[in-house]
Image (cartoon, rainbow, N blue to C red):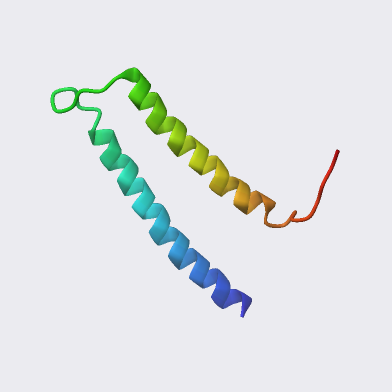
Length: 72
């Protein structure tokens, strides 16, 4: 059963990762100043949001084994 869970994880995670990478590449197309106008602040907001969501997702993987632990 563990093997089938891992296979499902690999299949789903690979597909979702490829979708995310495709969307990031599409976002990069917005950098063309001939077609778009944007400020440095707008760009910072975009990448801050992406970086925050990435940190959150990464933390969910790292913390999945450490639930319930507390240290002071």
